[in-house]
Amino acid sequence: MAPPKENVSLLFKLYCLTVMTLVAATYTVALRYTRIAETELYFATTAVCITEVIKLFLSVGILAKETGSLGRLMTSLRENVLGSPKELLKLSVPSVVYAVQNNMAFLALSNLDAAVYQVTYQLKIPCTALCTVLMLNRSLSKLQWFSVFMLCGGVTLVQWKPAQVTKVQMEQNPWLGFGAIAIAVLCSGFAGVYFEKVLKSSDTSLWVRNIQMYLSGIVVTLVGVYMSDGAQVLEKGFFYGYTYYVGFVILLASVGGLYTSVVVKYTDNIMKGFSAAAAIVLSTVASVMLFGLQITVSFALGALLVCISIYLYGLPRQDTTKIQPSLETESSKEKLIHM
Image (cartoon, rainbow, N blue to C red; front, side):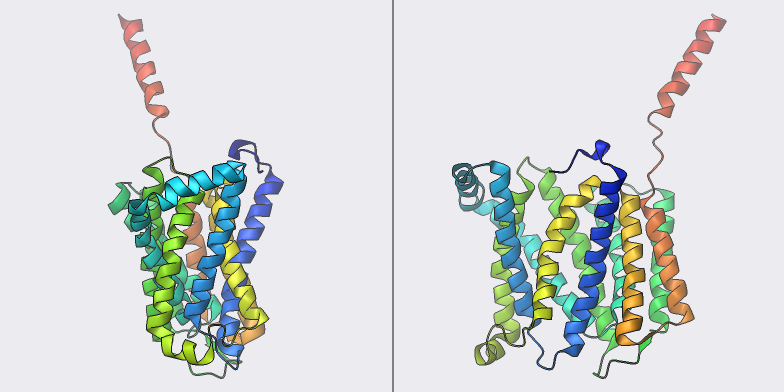
């Protein structure tokens, strides 16, 4: 059990930062590798479905530890899952959106280099910010709005003249990849804010909400398998094209998402910004070594702008609520002196 946020040591924060960075960078590079290196290409829809199943079992296990006994676990599942069809229906909304997002990630990394994907995917920040303003009635500081526009400019530079890869022989469609990322970031922004709104609408455990969402997610992704690859899956099998590398990608997607959701509460926005920037650097280095990525001036400048904008967006906002009372107190003292 990790210590409360205010008592967290620097060592633990660095541990969280390292894990989040490695998960983000490794997942992107490994997924890219499986989409271009495998001779028998697996079905992305089945991988997304299996990820949802693993997340469900992991969430049940964590809820079991949280409740402390099998009896309380069964009671919680019976009351919050089996006995709450309306809540399941409510959580089916982000399930559908996340399913689309995850499938778009596979499509994007089939057509874009991992580093280009990692930079462009940071568009989820302005998308999430916009959804937060519209759905949660929050406001952004001027610095945050500035960083949003800077980030969009950086992504534009990266996509203006896409970096070429020399070790990838398969045919790719960069515009299809960019379109897939565009859909993915829209899904990420909406689903993340929607899920936050559901979480804050009641005192229900995060893991109960995850179970509700993953149950809906399994149904949604199974429908996706049937609609997208149904005939081929029946002919070749559900696990066609699977290798140890594919299994590793699925494991990263399953464990990484859950782990990140846990450790993020022990870090701050600045650390998350550093993590995203470090993941971009690692993905770039890996892409140069594994896929022969040729870094252009526009890519380097765009990636730098994205990293800076992430840092600026995560800076804490100035709290003026504590300054105002002190000013009022000073003015009241002056009035008393002159009375």
